[in-house]
Length: 412
Image 1 (cartoon, rainbow, N blue to C red):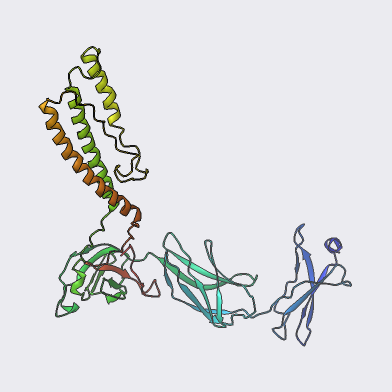
Image 2 (cartoon, rainbow, N blue to C red):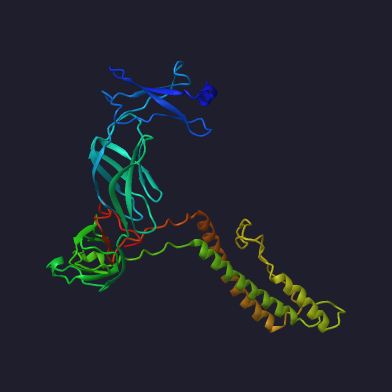
């Protein structure tokens, strides 16, 4: 049938109203190139319809056999567009734009598109027969955009309306940077602060926020000097806003204490080992009988010293009372037999060794306690420092944004 209609010179189509009148118009049928798309019509002012009921289409290769199109066509009057509000929007912050007019069609599932050359498009919502709403687009540069509206798949209609996308206000500096608080005369007695930046407008407002303010404070401009400078009077602030809250003392970190005690114990152990090594070296000829003098002493010194630095193995080993916590046992040079009991230096060395050993045992006990508490403590939660000591300030343009900002961000 499609092949026959494409090759037939007598192809026809007819448009039938689904209303009570059943008005029918017989129109020419033309094919677009070699595709499967055909055109019925055109309809013009001479093809009047008595009602706004949907239209049903039928096509025929010969005017005798008719094939119905799978979908009906909605019929509506051409709407009139009267205005758009608001006419301004910020570049990077979309806002709702309302198109006003008369006779906007109503149909369940009707797609309404708003096109704004060069290349911006938004889907619109039908509020009623006199208004449509859509979100303004986001742009990198300021520009004016013309508005076109399409209902369903109908051709776009030029509304004759435009919206402007503009840069929002931005602050570069404020002077003076500091002022007193608790003024008994209130904000009006304060001298205004000068705000320097860009894209300021005479209709802009100043917005302030501090620690004591539950919501932002909106203040009208005291003076509009130009696009790069305005003046505002700062609202009264509580005296507590300038008193920075005391910093909380950090909790004791037992893991740091444990690591510090390990270093102290290791230093004492090295000191004690060096004393023992020195005492053993003073025992003349007692090391290895028959060993030729200094060779034996030097060689033995190297062997013993190489083992002293490895007395602590790992801080993951269990602690068993007498050993240093985190090791497999004390790494102390064993006592050699005292072969010269009459040597006074030996007795003096024993007293020093006893004092060092006593200090080390005390540190070992403290380290054992710190190690247990280190394993039990939980990471300290991050605390948000309260805001105080300053006001956050921003310039808000009601022409570009519909609502006052609830919070002030990093641009303030």
